[in-house]
Image 1: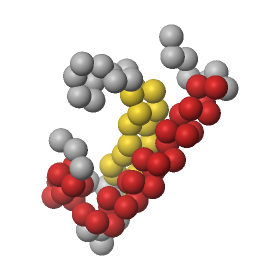
Image 2: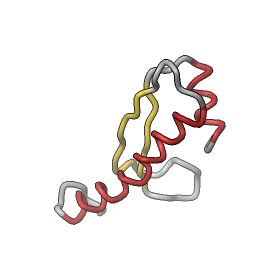
Image 3: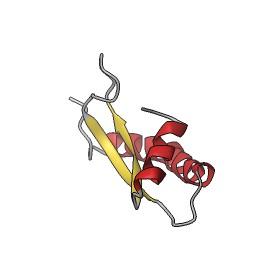
Length: 78
């Protein structure tokens, strides 16, 4: 599941948190080793669009933070 469907499912389930994951890519979708994750709060008045916008902001920031952690040696790729 990806894109709008994820946000719809999160809201329909009444979840209070969702998140973003950075992982190694392998043959199977979303099954590579996890390198970094972060949580994104779901607000009571969220719509699919408002939640998607908040998640997208973290989707843009987390890769940079993850690369910085790799360079600094806090995340090992080997």
